[in-house]
Image (tube, rainbow, N blue to C red; front, side, top):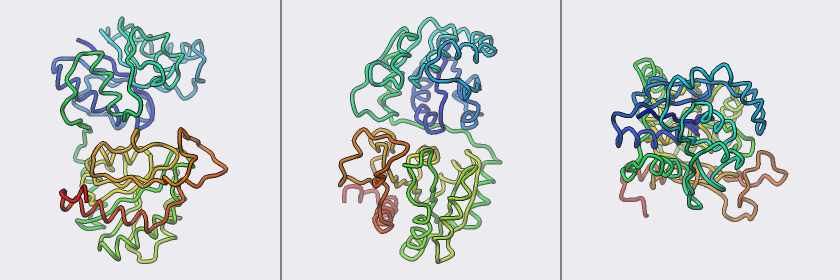
Length: 350
């Protein structure tokens, strides 16, 4: 059986789909799996033993909603898609362009989501089968439900997030850890939307509290074009027990595997940290922890429940932006609790 996984988008989107692919391979060990992803995000999938073929495409120039233009942009890649001769394509993205990719693959069965679970409902016309998802379903569970309905697989086991790392990735992480010691915190001030950002200077002050009260140094981890955030965080730090690093995606994954705690917002590195099994404290504002956050019960979300404007928000700009107005002490209290739980798991319900 030959399956095409269509998940094009962000790093977080790809990480959230990994458990579904792991479940497919566990239930159907002889299945041939191809995955089509955006070039800018595909690096996290390279070398993954679950994927027989990784197809990298670039749809940045495609304007959402224009099927004819999408077809023209992808014309040069149709031959590669069709070469797979897929029995089924599973569209985990729910966009018009992802449904077009599934259609262009030539797969006779094209599965996706139904109704409100689709990000762009018009994409439904390009699918042959659709799966309804219960309200308030975590994105990982949502993807697992699609895989179960499409392929009849078992999804009852604990989800896995397989990411392949090599010696170079491990060396990159070890180089950063050598500057920190065995116990350390990862702080990530980045985020795809401005409204997801907790003030970067707060991370500098948080690093002070982590050192003074938990005796752990911290590392500010940023990606390309986030040097300003790193500088602002460093400017808020007084103890000097804070360093900066800009690792590769897989180097970051290897680093997160060794971290005592990770703190960040709803962004790709947070989802990678969750996949790595790091103890996580998430700072969430315009998006929902129940949907995008950790599936690990002992991880902690810091969010404001005392305001009435966060329901179905998802705003990338906001004139009332107060959801991320959270004190450093509040976040530190969550960090201290999460570190304690990691040391003594029986404290999870304390």
